[in-house]
Image (cartoon, rainbow, N blue to C red):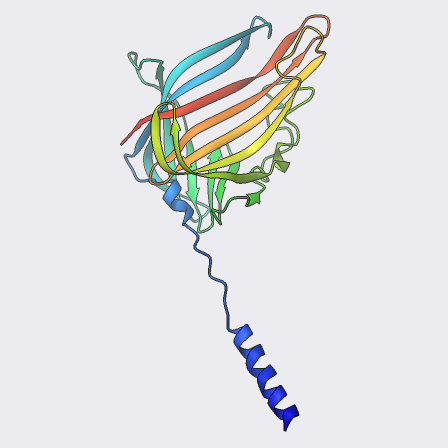
Length: 246
């Protein structure tokens, strides 16, 4: 009798366990890249460039407007074509075309395609600590044709993107609610260089996305320093933050 009761209890326990499902409250990633034709976001953009054969550091300041031109398809997936327009720091000049790119919406990821280079900017689930190979589809050394890097820019396709922070933030005087920070890479060596530094590198990439708006901040630094017979820098840097949107 005891044996039968024990088996009955065990069977019931196993049955109840197999019917329990873990439910996760996960936000849809499309809430953080809201796209529709006519929507635009204007950013302040500070561009770090190295002039005079890499011996001088300059910061060039602009405004750049990203506007959704039209809805298209990307290998059967819903996608949007975005146009970049560039102006001076105070937007008192003419808006000049600065190219286009695509943003493709998938059920579990958001892809950004620029010059046929595809990056997974956001990936489900939106959860702190979750990581993915955002540059996994990039070729080896994607900047090879632009810069003759010696120390950086080669293994970008192995970068681990991850959600590091979430919450309300104030960026350059603008307050946002529900902001996800995506740390794409953070490798700094010997920066800033000193008089005794032989070489230094900086490969830093961070993006922030606000719910109901989209990208509100980006910091992308890709450059190296070498002393050699004459010290010089090579590469570029971009820091941009939203100043308005419709």
